Image (tube, rainbow, N blue to C red; front, top):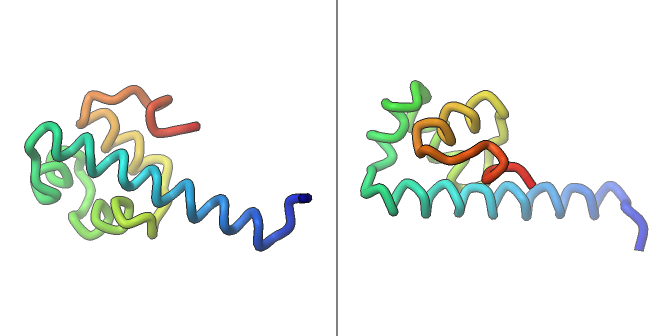
Length: 78
């Protein structure tokens, strides 16, 4: 099966959902609320919520969040 536009879009959406779940799990493991993580990461709570729900993808935001969570960036990038 070749990579067609619908297949690429599906894989992208799947990856964003998995990434959001990883961030949510790491945040909860540190017993942090979305508000706390957003403030410490210098992003809005709305940005963080979108990322945790697999809606938004912004590399700079991921770097800020991973740094705040103490995660290496490679944890967030496959």
